[in-house]
Amino acid sequence: MSHLILALDQGTTSTRAVVFDSRDWRALATAQVPLEQHFPAPGWVEHDAEEIWRASLQVCREALAEVGGVSRVAALGVTNQRETTVLWERATGRPLHRAIVWQDRRTADATDALARAGHEPLVQGATGLVLDPSFSASKIAWLLDQVEGARARAEAGELCASTIDAWLMFRLTRGERFVTDVTNASRTSLFGLKELAWRDDLCALFGVPRALLPEVLPCAGTFGETAAEHFGRLLAITGCAGDQQAALVGHGALEPGAVKVTYGTGGFLVAVTGDTPAASTNRLLLTVGYQAGGRLAYALEGSIFSAGSTIQWLRDGLGVITASRESEAMAQALKDNGGVYLVPGFTGLGAPWWEAEARGAVFGLTRDTRPEHFIRAGLEAMAYQTRDLLQALAADGAPQPARLKVDGGVTANAWAMQFLADICGVPVERPAYQEMTALGAAKLAALGAGLTDRLDGGPDEAPAVWTPRMAPDERARLLAGWDAAVHACLHHARA
Image (cartoon, rainbow, N blue to C red; front, side, top):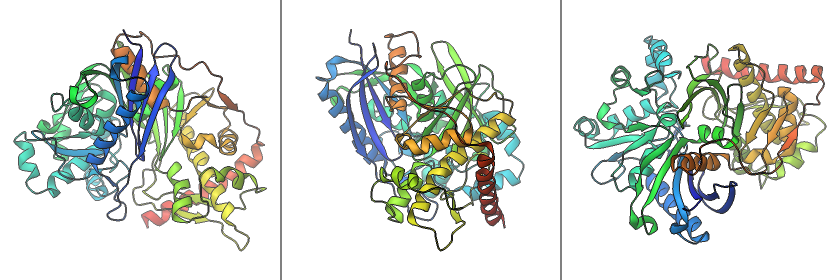
């Protein structure tokens, strides 16, 4: 039997496929296609679901060709940008609207109204999530209300709505399987964490017909088989998880107390808590970490809405750099930050603030401020926001992590990783192989296909480690400036 696993990693800015050897987790082939984002109105973010589907087929075919064809591969694992929502026809697979992306804020009024009506304790108690437009339920309701005839068709069972993983598996199986996994379901505001099932009371609260929603499965097992026409023969789909949970598995951060942070478009801290759900009292999210191999783990999560996208804005929006890799040298060239703080609230602020109306702001400008200060402030903001999440985690009673396991494109910036270690006061560990989401999906698929009986382990390469070296008084001074900038942003948003 083949030991090769194909991982499909559908992200916010690109779609990637990687073939791994499950015996040593070496990556043997990689293909990637960028994904266009659409911004039809302020705070709105959309993707073309058909573009996602075409790109997914393309990268899978390219990666398979590189290793000698589908006959050499045992199974497929899927990981995806979470909360991004698609509405489509059950009979044809045709999407009825562009996908609404997790960053999108168009339903802020709807979630605010639910909060004012006193529904947040129910939602948070059942799902572990705060009432916020980033989660899928309000997006589904918006689509049903805005697409002509959609609500009546949904109630008649003619439509499907779900996250990107279910959309891809529906198309891969030619509509034979409409399924999701527990990690993606736990990000919808419709899924009970204790029951591990859709809740009728939450469906009624958000106005989402139960008939729209997929079957929910553990992260490793039988999700279906791809149609032969896609890759030349049937290929079993045996693993699935949302991107942040897949990265958790990729890192092997599986036991209580383990913490990882992924810096992609956004930044996501996930801390494993154990096999019973323990809600946060400090505005972190409770979520399913993974369910596989007879094990169930819950996790607390903090979301940074803008991480890598901040550097992308500095590059593409302001033009202060021409390539993201320039940011390290520019930040390092300054003796300090010049008192400049950038609060990247471009699509609101995530945990622990959860302020959908916040917008980006820069504080501390003087006549001496140069483009380099904007770059440094953007990089520093990722570290400050991570410290805010660790502070909330500590307030929930979690121990200080021994190390922060990190991954994502920004972690290639050694200056930013040293600053992260300094501001958080915790050693930072970056694995030599960076594609943790794809690796996690492959591990889950290997477990589901019976190629392994464990989720820990990974490529046998030494990680890079940064240890804190900043003086405590300097850390306190910088954090005081950051805290003042954030509170000024929050005051403006709430005025």
